[in-house]
Image (cartoon, rainbow, N blue to C red; front, top):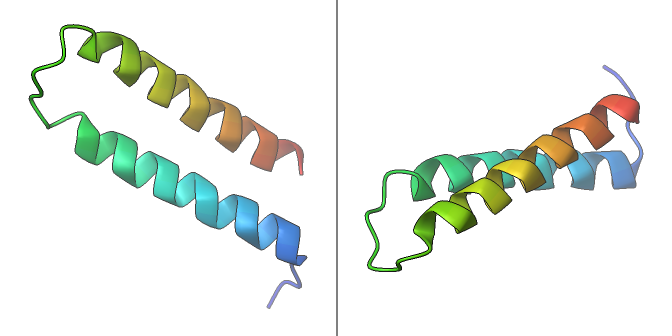
Length: 56
């Protein structure tokens, strides 16, 4: 088994949670008129997190 540092494990866990909650939120039809902006922000944050993990 690979030995991971606690920071890497925390970053990986955070990325999985971000992706899961972003996917879940994409199916929620809210009443916010700016919902599309929040979806794009969540997607960008998830992509940035996965890129950072790829660098690590």
